[in-house]
Length: 159
Image 1: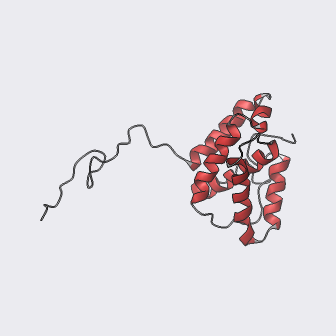
Image 2 (image 1 turned 30 degrees about the vertical axis):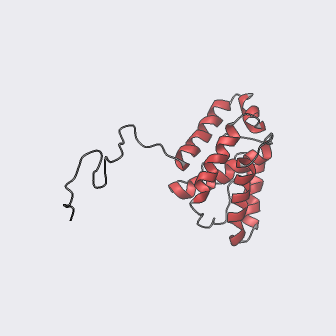
Image 3 (image 1 turned 45 degrees about the vertical axis):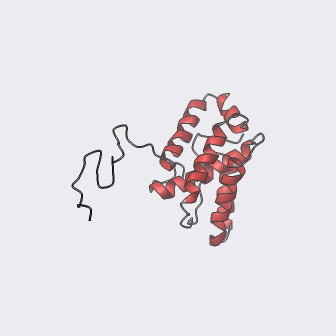
């Protein structure tokens, strides 16, 4: 595995994926990102490391766009702009990251065998958190329309 750190673009496969994005027409970049996510998310068999590495890189691009953060390793990520990505890629990115971490994933197995395995898992967890944030522990859904944080607000009388 040609890997030098735990960030999404810190491996040869992800760097090649970034180059492929740079070489693609602007209109094709979303399709390349979607395909990388779908290959991992839809995998029912053993997920090979290269497909998983591309999915992590693609998920990082979605996370960066929806959260406004910069990539952890911008020198290996795409140099050309990424078009505005559709909102449905967020859930697809979460599903692909879950698949990368699941059983029958070569990349997860390789990282578990390495010294940096826990750091890599934290990195994936941080990406997932950006894509699918958990509401704060004290968050409460309103009791009924017009109420906020469980406190009822005056309602107009029914006619």
